[in-house]
Structure formats: C-alpha cells, structure tokens
Image 1 (cartoon, rainbow, N blue to C red):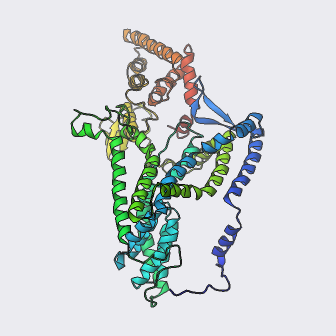
Image 2: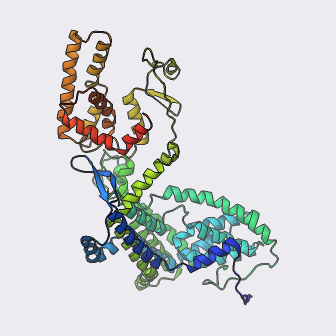
Length: 601
C-alpha cells in the first residue's frame, strides 16, 4: 500500500476559523472547567445570599397554600459543607448519567470488541450503488454513534476506500463519513448510550424543579429521529454538489486499505463475519421479543383472556385503567437502559461466538471490563459534574435562574405564541355603551352572539365550561389542571367546574336582573338572596377544609370559580367569609393570574 509522507510544517487555518481553532486548543480540560465553574458558583452564591435574592417556587406550595419562597444560599453554610463532605460517595454514585452510561457500556463494550459494530458498518456501505454511496455512508455514520468511537476508527477510512473503488474522490468519502459521525453524532433512528448520558443530565437538571419527575431513554427519540431525516439530505447535497465538485475528478484509481486500526477495511466479509451478523440479528430479535413479552401478556392476548402468564400485571406495564397509555408504559420506557445492555450483550456474544472472536466466557468478561476501562476519563468528568450539579441545587441558584429566566422571557415583549409555542389571537368585543349588551358582530361568529368564544381549527365553541373542557382535553395532556378519573380530587374538581355556572352562579345572576328591573323587593329576589347566601356558606365551608376547590391541587375549577368569587368580593359579600378571601389572595398571587390581568382579560 502506498504511503504519503506527512508535510514537514503543519499548516493552520487562517481567519475566523483559525482563531476559533487556536482559542479552542487553549481551553483547559473539561474537568478543570468544572472546577472553575464551582469556584464561580461559590462566589455567586455568597453574593446572592447577602443580597437576599429569592423566588417563588413555581410548583411547590406551603401547607396554607401560599407559594414556597426559595432563597439563595451561600455554599459556606455549615450544614451545606457537612452535606457536601459527608455525602460525597452518594453524590457521585447517585449522579443520574453515571449509572445509565456505565450500564449501557457494559454491553456496548462486548459488541464493539467482538467486532460486531465494525463488521456491521462495513456490510452496510460496501455494496451501496454509486449514486447512493453518499446517503448510505452518511446514514451509517449517524447510526454508528451507537458504536461510540468505533465509527471514527472503522467507517471514515472505509468510506475513503469505497469511494475510490467506485471511481469517486476518497476525500469526499472521508468528508461524508466525518460529517455523519461527528456533525450528526446526536442523530439516530435508535436510542443508545449517548441518549443514556443526555437524558440522565436532563433528569438531574429538572430534579431541581420537580423532584419526582422521571424521564426515559426514549424520551428524545422523536427529536433524534427527525435530526436524522434532516441531516441526511444536507450531507448528501453538500458532499456531492459542493465538496466533490471542488475536489475535481478522481484519477488515482482504487486504493488499498488504510493504515488505521483495520487494515482489511476494504476486504470482503469472511464467512465467519457473515455468520456472526446473522446470529447477532437473531439475538437482537430475541431480546426485542423478550421485552415485548415482559410488556404485553401475549398468552392472554392470544387466548382472549382465558389464560395469562402475568395475571394481568406484566412486569413492564402498569395496568391501572386511570392512567393514559403513555403512563402505563413508563415501566417499559424506564427499562430500556437495561434493555440496551441486554441487547448489545446478546448481539455481541452471538456475533463473537459465530465469528470466532469470543472463545469462552472469560473473553466476554474481559471485553466488558475493557468497556469499563474506556470509561475511566468519563468517571473523572462525572465526579466533577456531579459535584457542580449538587452545589448548584444546594445554592438554589438553579431554581432562581429558571424562574427569573422564564420571567425575563415573559417580560421581553415577545408575542405569546413565540414564548408559549401555542399560536392564538385574543379578539375583544366591546359591549354596547347604552344597552351594555354584546355587539351585533358577535352574531357573525356564533348564532347566540355571546362571549366568551373559542375558535380552534375551524370550530367555534361557546359556553365557558365547554371551552375550559375543550382546552384541557386538547392541550393539558399531562393533567396539570384537571385530575384524572379515579383520583380522589376528580369528583370535587368536576363538581366545582360545573358549579361555576350552576347553583352558586344562578342566584347572583337573577338578582342582577331583579335590581335592573326594579324587582329587588319581590318574592323572587328574597328567595334568590337566600339561595345566594347558602351558596356563599357552602363555598366558605369547603375552603375552610381545602386549599383549592379540588383539594390540594390547583385545577381549572379554581379558574372558573375565581370569576364568581371576584364578583362576590367586589360586592362585599365575602366580608364574613375569611377562607374565601384567603383563597382569592392565593389565586391572585399566582404568576398566571398576574399575566392574565396584564393582558386585560
């Protein structure tokens, strides 16, 4: 194989790219960067503590229903220093990304060292048609992040060899492979160890706001799959239409191999390697079947319920009928870390035994240990990152930054559709100045000519309760404002949702009309006054015992009942109802209420 001497003088990129390269090379090791960040964090925690910086927690409330205040805390406090020193092993081992990545890499280490990843990549691109060579290389390169660094070692030199054999410039092959491996490193059609790392970091970050929030390794799948679809045509176009044209035609003919780790990168697959791939494919299918079997009671499904393996309670499925399907599948999703360990391990062993790279169980254990050896630097980095995250949470600067950042976005003047991601337009219709009735133009929107109205996807919906129910059903899929059927708050929530325009509402409305028509001393008015007072007493008695109308959970029932209580308060009807007045104070203290008032709703 011909070799090319390296240039005597290393050339550096010039201009802005050269500056970025030189500046990047001067950056310290990431572990040291975390050490600097910890030092900065300590100084900022002291300053913010002394300044008395604090925020209202967006989720937690005190026993009296008032928002929990989270103050900045300097990290020099005695109890925090004790926590950081006494709990050092726990802080490190409980760092979310650590366990996820190490578990997956136990299996990935076997699959990589047995040769499965390298052989699979070679098989995927060797026989691709010439005009499909670039998308094939780019796709395999993006999928190859499952193999971690093996893609750099195997696929990039292999792409050069294959391009040259096809009469195309090998540098274009290197560019396409590198773009997929490095530029598209997070894109994939399947979750892998990178997702284990990233979702662990996400879970650790969100934990500062919602302590019991749980993510799963497939939670980012829609995004990474979409990235694959977007990146593939971009790499294809840039490689074929720009890079290869600039390189000019390749006149060197086919080249032989590479000096990289695999000297036989361009060689045909051996019979053992082909057999290994077949066995690995069967192992993958077997693991997938096992996970389906643990999630769905297949015996009950086939026998129409006459027989059952799991007794209606599969290990990876929550059969609670009150839950949505996505929540019933939470055990399945959270088991995928273990699933990838078993999948990589089974496929790697099956390949290695068939291809001859694994002779006995000791080879398997040695490969697993080798995978852990490669994680040495990651362990050091994880220790530094774990301590930074822990100190960030202890200082309360995480929650303070999140809340103030959200407030800054809200106050930025950006349109709400951009901020919230939900496009909507608020249309105001002023009442007639003389009659105080709704304007005639409302009849063009709805035959009743009443407000409020909601128009969504061509449908116009009237009645406040119906609008609220529609918005909750369409947009509140996480049930933040309406409890699920079966929960203890559900019955109270449903009752007060309808009470907002039912029994407590009707007497007040009738009294308005009796006063407007001079019938305030009539028998009807006297009867309605008694019914109104009964409604106020019922509301007061309920709020003495509950923080919100549904219980401890703020729901849409509070949103609808708020209109009634606001009107009662303005009319002086709550002077003897301290619990109802306290409810109003809590409701008015919510950021969402303040934003509503700012918008003039």
